[in-house]
Image (cartoon, rainbow, N blue to C red; front, side):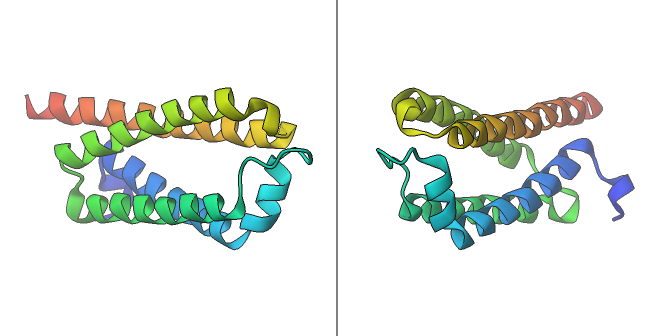
Length: 138
């Protein structure tokens, strides 16, 4: 199946999967310098271990999306899990900003906000793609 023949939901799953794998690898491989970048010098809030754990989670998330997109997928259940995960990411990001705002550097705040925007984009296309598939079935 070529990329042009895939549904919007399938394309979004492929993009989210690939992006999550790249971000997860970066978080794991560059955890120490990223932790130094996102924290203020006085109070480090985010540790390299936390970033590596987040990176590992993103690797799993990416593999989930890529496997769900195989063979013309994803199925509705996978889409709903993914949508819920994206919503949870947004809530967790807001909680992080509220809890650690004073401990984050300007770069740290920017990275969290940029991440929220990226996840919101994926969420939008997943919702739209799922709606298109439900319309096509009806």
